[in-house]
Length: 229
Image (cartoon, rainbow, N blue to C red; front, side, top):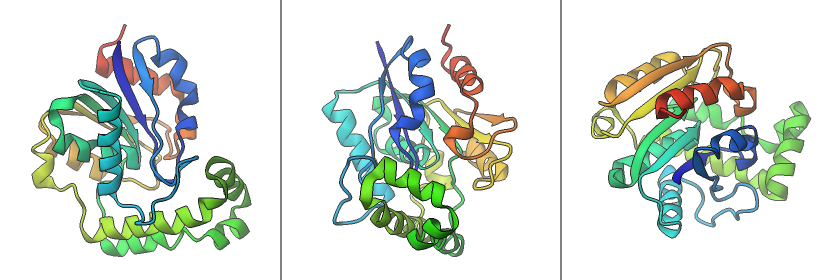
């Protein structure tokens, strides 16, 4: 059976894919690895970088002996998937990304990272703090600043750029929700134009969080792109 990797975003969790696994498991062996610092996986003493997560993905594929793998990545998961494709094109069949931010600048990364303050989240968005606690345990308060540092690192030196995106020749579909307030349609179009064998999909009435995406809509788009019937 074909292998499908479902990659969560920063501060996300593999349980966000629960509404999709039953239907997709008709076509694929499903893999939902967790990046370090998320869920029950310890936070590395060396912090978090996109390069580290790309290495973790490579190690997972090696351990599970995954080749010709299909990948869906939400948000940061999509960024990691494309970084992995740059280094290991021979192991990948195709990639779909949804709500992946590509246009990173230092100024904007600093601005976004300031919002990842545990104290402020507890005070202003207690429900979200409870969700982070339930998904990641008590270490969620260490995970936030680690993710903030990763964002700043991305702003200073983004691993993906127009030049190396042109080197990704595997089939890819870049997807964006039309109501995503974290990622612009414009930056998604730029990447779609840069990756030689890419398609573009704009999901109607769709916000950034994975739990705001309508499963039937996304599964239908997956079936179309991957020619599942």
